[in-house]
Length: 163
Length: 163
DNA sequence: AATTAATATTAGGCTTACCTAAATATTGAG
DNA sequence: CTCAATATTTAGGTAAGCCTAATATTAATT
Image (cartoon, rainbow over all chains, first blue to last red; front, side, top):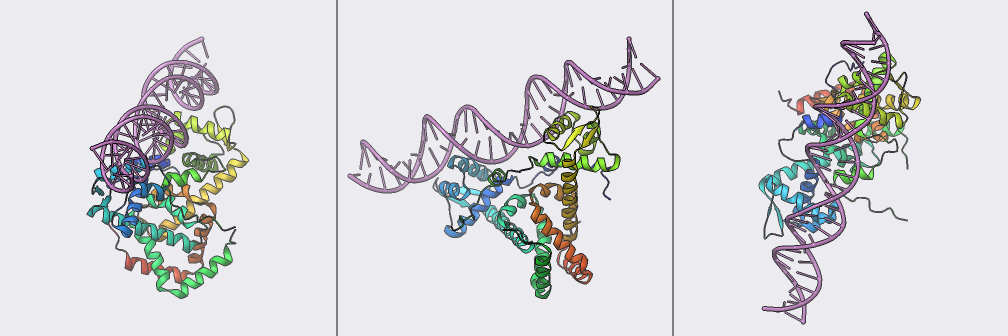
């Protein structure tokens, strides 16, 4: 029985405030950087309009967010119109993408009906150490296909899939 | 009719807007209701000040949030100062608490260093079907202690706990 | 070079969801 | 009836992130 008597409960907001991000990245900034990273993997640079399309927001929003990412040292401008990753941006971007993939992979394993959406909502909240542990869980199933198979069958017997 | 390529990316906010909760509950409202439910388990009713203490917010905040929960039909006033759960409140509160426990349990399984905090941040984002599936994962380990043991050993071999 | 089209930025405002302090109101105990 | 505890209202503030509309910049075409 978990007793609420401990005074350590807070509302979501309370926890969010408690957790100050050393990276300076807010959830939305992480999304922008993650997307910039994806796009730079393909073309080595990206642009405001491209990001705008891919994230379904207006260019003006991108403009503002990109300039914040520049200030934070994750992005830089090339000729004033192409956006590049800095070294820090590459490192962090790679982490964000990996984190994304791990979590999406996890939701897929669990059998979520919309892994992408749930990932987008959740990824920003997890500490890197937890992400690592979730990855470990995935690795465990990967390295033990027999157990993986057993779990999948258990899962599908237990949960009735909708849709 | 082919499904719209729903692989469209959005920012967190985009997803949050997309997902309008039929229950009318925001993350913070869920926290208030969950706590009210916990407290009512112990004493059958609760109060503004009690909630205020337990959630580390000011009474005036509680007052406002409670009145929202009353409007939504989850709580009701008794003698103008004791707060009770409605039937709907009991059902939903029970769900919220169970969800909380499942997720916290999951983080504990994974080996998170702060399961409570991470749970509070994440719980509001997950669909009930995914919660169910995570529960299934837990059940799988519960019902297969051998596998559970194997995983724990694998986990502890793989992840070096920080101090 | 001048015009137009494409791009990007700025300015300013809006919304949501909280939270707070301070003033006021209510309740209930003695 | 009065004091203390409790609750509510009022009025205000913050933070993040988005938008529109106006402006500025760059690139492309003639």
